Image (tube, rainbow, N blue to C red):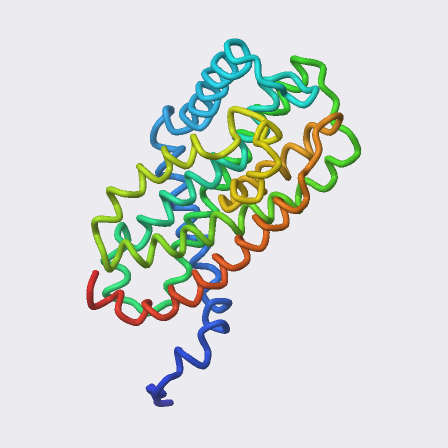
Length: 274
C-alpha cells in the first residue's frame, strides 16, 4: 500500500502565498455564493432592500438638493445624476461594512483551517458587487423613464467600475485587519459609512466645490470614483476635474497597496486573537 507523506515546510505560506490564493480560488466562489444565498434566497426583503435603499436615498437627495437647494445637475435629470453616484457609493459602503466584519463572522473557520485570509474580505466585496448590479438595473430603468440616452463615453464605465472595486477592497482590507485587533472598530464602521455619505458628492455635483478647494476635497478617494462614474454615464455638460481625479486615483492605489501589506503583516496573528 502506498504511503502518503506529509511534509511541513517552514515558511511555505510566506513563499507560496499568492500561489495558494489561486489554489483556493474555489473558496472565493463558496463564500460568495453562501453569502448571496443567505442574503437573497431565504428572505424577500434581501432583494427588496437592495432596491429600496438606493431609491429612498435618491429621492431624499433629489428633493433636498435638487428641488429645495436647486443645485446644478450637469445637464442630466437630477435623479439620474444622484443615482449615477449612488452606484459606486453603495458598492463602497456595502463592501466596507461586509469586508470589515468578514473575519469576525468567519472566526471559527479561521481558527481551524489554513487558507489565505485575503479570501474573506475579497469575497465580501464580490458579494457586494451583486447589489451593485441590481442597482445598475434600476439606473437603466430610470434612464428609460426619463428618455435619457448616454453618450459613447459610457464604454469607459468598466474602467471606473474597476477603480470602485479597488477602492472598496482597499478600505475593506484595512478595516477587516483592524477589526480583528481592535473590536471597537465594529462600532466605528457605521459612523464612517454615514459620515462618508455626506462628505462625498452623492447628492450634489462636485463642481459646486470652489476650484481652490477641489484638490483638498479629493483627498476623499470616493470623490474621484463618483466623478468618473458621472462622467461616463451622464456625458453632456458633465466634466471631470482631472487633477482632483488623478489625486483620488493615486490615493486609491496607495491605500490598496498599503492595505494588502498591513493585512499580510497582521494575518499571522488572526487565528490567535480572533
